[in-house]
Structures are given as structure tokens and as C-alpha cells.
Image (cartoon, rainbow, N blue to C red; front, top):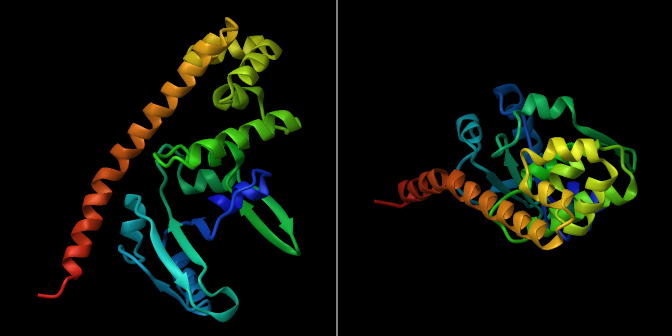
Length: 223
């Protein structure tokens, strides 16, 4: 669900981590613990690997010690802000074959939603993912491009290509309304405002989780 998924979708990103979204029931967590032991993966931060923590939206972090994967960090989550639940995400996942292995990825629209965070590095990645889909003629519906394109010129082009879909999208996205008018500067301002609002929502989402993690750290202190 992270940088490695972006690479598979053709948006180059350097990533030292493996980010996984998982079903956090006890049977699946038992299988996960077995896999982590085989990698000699050790926890590197709070919280601990627990279904309740994952369900709340916490990320759980491990560092692998086994020789062939030494240093690899694995980040695990089960709930993402603004993204559907695991079962729905799994039902519409993208599955690829790579070097004889089957790899399941978040569907591209879900990956884009998951990347709408407060982190600076995620927004250029969203732009590359959606542009890559649009310019390659990938089998995504035009509604996805109109909802997510972050390049004003391409958004204007898409609005002209798909006028009916653009008029429908404009009701919920001011940037599309500006694109229909052909106003590049206004579309750019609207896109920037979208990003500002999403960053604020992400900070609001993480604030109670951050406080919980701080309390977990305090609880670990001796005495």
C-alpha cells in the first residue's frame, strides 16, 4: 500500500520500507507473527502488534534482522483515513505476477486516497500516479481522472474530453468547475486548497493516535 505499490504502478519512488495493509483478525495475526519470526523481525516502536491497536488506525513497525533482509523495515496497518475497510479494498485489489510471485496491491484509486496525508512527499507521488494513469490510457474510468488529476492543464484537457463526466464531477470538486471554464490559474488554486484541506484532515485524524502513542511510551518508562 506504500512506496513499493507506487513502483509497481509505474511511479518511481525510492523506498526502504515495506508498507502492508492487513486483515487484523486473530487468525490472520497468528500467521503474520509466524512470518515475522521467520524474518527475525523485531518491533522498533510503540504500539505493539495487537488487533485493537490496528483497528484504531495505529501503525505497527518492525525491523528485519535475518541476513537476506537485514535492515528492512515493515510497517503494518489495518485502517486508513478516508479509505474503505479491508474487505472492500481486498475485493477490488490489483493482482500482478512478479518473478513468479503473486502480489496484491491496493487498487490505484484506493492507493491515491491512502496517499492523501500531511507528508510533503506523498503529494508529488499522487500527481505522478494519476498522471501516469491518464497519459497511459490505463483502464480507469474518467471519473477517477477528473476526481484526482492535480495538474491544471491535464485537468482542463480531461474536462474537454469528458464534458458530461466533468459537469457531474464539478458539483463536488471546484477545481473541475474551474477546468470547465478553462481557467488554469483558478484550477491550480483550487487544487492547492484541496491539498491544504486534506493535510488538515490527516493531522486531525492522527492527533488522538499520537497522544495515545505518547502515553504508551510513558508507560514503558521504568519507575
